[in-house]
Length: 447
Image (cartoon, rainbow, N blue to C red; front, side, top):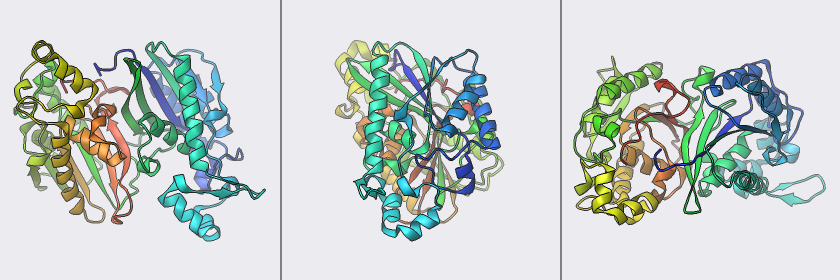
């Protein structure tokens, strides 16, 4: 992304399948759980894919299931690196819950288990010595300490790739801390064994900028999409590349079609999703997402693609058709504000990001309301639209659009629950590995 100049790139990897995972037992901070044969194979596959990038440093939790994952990954990297073990990467301490099945905890600690499922940050556990503590709140403090130490060590923000191997709950807390800890965020993201999540950090006028490049990428494990955990699922895709994306022009609501690369990206997304049985599809009214949706659906031509105007791209007004350098000449202050505080900008004769957020959420809510059990729905839209929707799912304000990355042809998976009290879960964000690389190398465009 052109707004992330010197980038500290953090690769978060959850340990491979462990003996407790395989048996459906709660692990917590216990070190009795070890890496299974499948877990070692997952670590090997993760090491092979991470060999595409130049990893500079490795940090790992000292617990054996994580440290064995780290040692296995390190063997497959193209240089010898010393693994730095850090206590701040230990998993959540769940005291005497460790070693129990979820069903046993539900039976023995009924009300605590409900809190754990619905509002884990409020959970308070009693240790054997009768003292009380709040495991997730303590874990967030631990996460902050780890991130602070990494930023302090890399205060000059040179381009660097740092690999962090740890556990489900602590990685969630690390990522959520980096995106300003949205309310009730802990249950809104999913991390599978040996999945890769990439966060880009940069400094801008001394303030830290965070961008989620991808979450819960598992294609290197031959798992194209994570197992469904909701009652239904929505697969959100950004349209393929256009010539204006490639040139860096603000296209907005000018109806620029897909170029050859864009059609190819849509076809690759279709191939990647070939095992998915879509039964509903929606698109913005514009030709670039509509054509992307048609290519993705392929032979499923019997599925009607419902076109929704509210999913159209942001209107850039007088900026449309212009390169950034042209806009810089005429509206330098407004362009700078757009990069730094997008929520303060109303495009000249165009829209604000708040306008886009309101209309795209209206469309999203109607799509969700129409979901029936086991529906798998395709939604194809645009960069700004997808970003405002994903901010909302994560519990972030639309002012945080730069926190989310959406590559051309990138695939995002949202699991939806029938129970209105249950938040949607972001099961994967911005998968672009079908386009050739672990990193998102699609055109940055003008947005």
